[in-house]
Length: 396
Image (cartoon, rainbow, N blue to C red; front, side, top):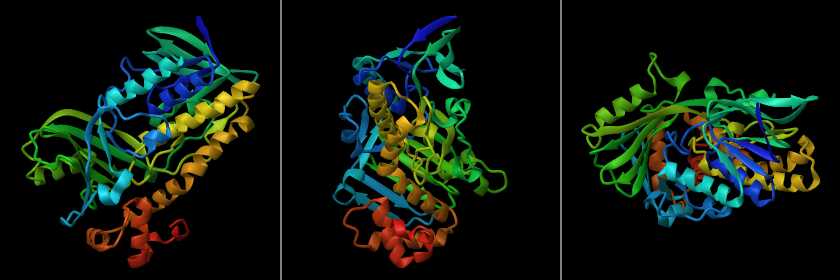
């Protein structure tokens, strides 16, 4: 069996994996980045919307190559048609881009390669290797051949499925209430606002929301996330999305160019995302915004944090759980309170009926909110609808 030797092997070349590989390589580590698919970033498993403000934080320069749309703002709607439109004057850095995600992912992998990481496509991890109880690498199947990659530390960036974490003994189990089912159509021949992302909440998407992310020339990503346990009569995400499209005259004459689907975790992160000789990043660590299901920025941040911490461990040769705990502190200091707050908000929103949601949106639209973000929206909600934020008032 062919054996590769390196300092760190990163499993998964999504944003989290590529960022981890880049920062490990920049730190002088001999880095191998593996990806099970034949093409990085494809097939698409993402709505392709991101905010802008975090890109500089993680060292990503916006590039027209992977930006499909530069949004002016967003529209939030209730099922009864009440709308709240916000633009850059209020939303600031929360306004974002609609990406060409496959090009974005390739750009991040290119950055990792330029830093010195070796990329191996069509290479799937099949197990972790343990010797004397210690993780010393992974087994994989690469281009039809069984191989071993021996490494001092493993970064699990293998997304929602997070097999590497489970093999390493880390409990990544999710409650049913913390899983949303998603489906998205890339549609053409539709008539939507070209510069505004649209979100519809309420019974049209039980426990989740409908999104419309424009990509220009009458094309948009139109998708939905739903909490399975709230869907009635056996209906699934596709049923609710098809129903929404059929009832919207802007969309019902459109045609699908692409369909993608999958699941997303909506919990506030694992209890611990490290163990001896292993680090979990991004979706694999369940570090994802519970209220939106958005995970690109969280993956990039955690990948960067992992790479920086591992680069320090490289200097000492210590990759024990204790040595890796600075990674836990970094992501928790930066994101944990917000993730928990948004998880609590997600739980509460799922219990509201359409009339209450309509009243919430009317109240938000009339409130004097100088900068619109989840925190300030919840502050406004707390004043008028205190029961909605019961249990997490101290985070607002």
